[in-house]
Amino acid sequence: MNEFFNETTLLSVASLVAIGSVAAVVLYVVAQKFKVIEDPRIDQVEDLLPGANCGGCGLAGCRALAEAIVREERLEGFYCPPGGNQVMQEIAEALGWEAGEQTPMIAVVRCSGSRELSPPKVNYEGAMTCAFAHNLFTGEGGCPYGCLGCGDCMRACQFDAMYMDRQTGLPVILDDKCVACEACVKECPRDIIEMRKKGKKDRRIFVSCINMEKGGVARRNCKVACIGCGKCVKECRFDAIVFENNLAYIDFAKCTLCRKCPPVCPTNAIHELNFPPRKPKAGKEDAPAQA
Image (cartoon, rainbow, N blue to C red):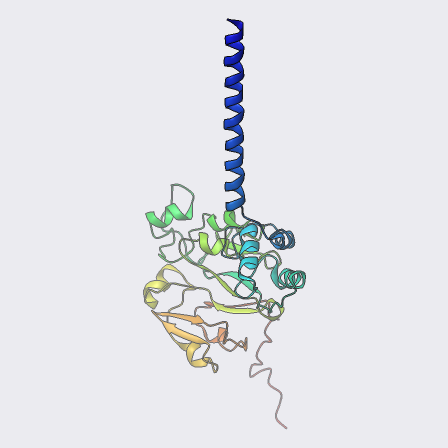
């Protein structure tokens, strides 16, 4: 009896060993056939990236960007906004490639409808998110295009480059912290945040309004709305301002920052940032006496 059990036990163990051995061989063959050898340059590129995983490059994160760069064997078409030209140059040197310079960009808020300039007509009581409020009503000031002031853009920013001004109710972008990742642009349901060329000495000129209503209607809801008068278009000598749907728009690729258009805007809808103060024009009383 004991001999029978011993033989049965040995046979069972031998069968399991045989099955395990065959399975191991099969798994090894399959693993060798379908194994993926990862290019070590991917880790090299990822280590040079800032690790923000912000998605500003248009991909899922820094690892995805590194994989795409190595897979495509080029840097053209790829750019890391937080890292900027410096990081892209470091990647190019590490891989033995060349990297072109890209124009630094920055986010701008194209709405100036503060609580003072666009006084509230209703009191919003609901979920404090722009996405929810946008689907619910036009806005406390009555402008269907203006900032809702709930701070979705600020919460989307991973670099503390934005804050909500309690007095105006509008978002404020910090030039020295904005990395042009576009997270705030994607988050705003009203598309009032735009990426624009940073400009020399951080100087920019743009129309801070996206209201496409007719001038009278837009002005009733906001004192600094673009009323579509076209004066800025006539003033620009470089064809940098286009007029469409009752709204003026300054093309930053053509704008020379000559500062001719802001003074002619009757509603001060055109903003000029980081320029030195304008010199006051001499009046008749201040004009030099004629000899």
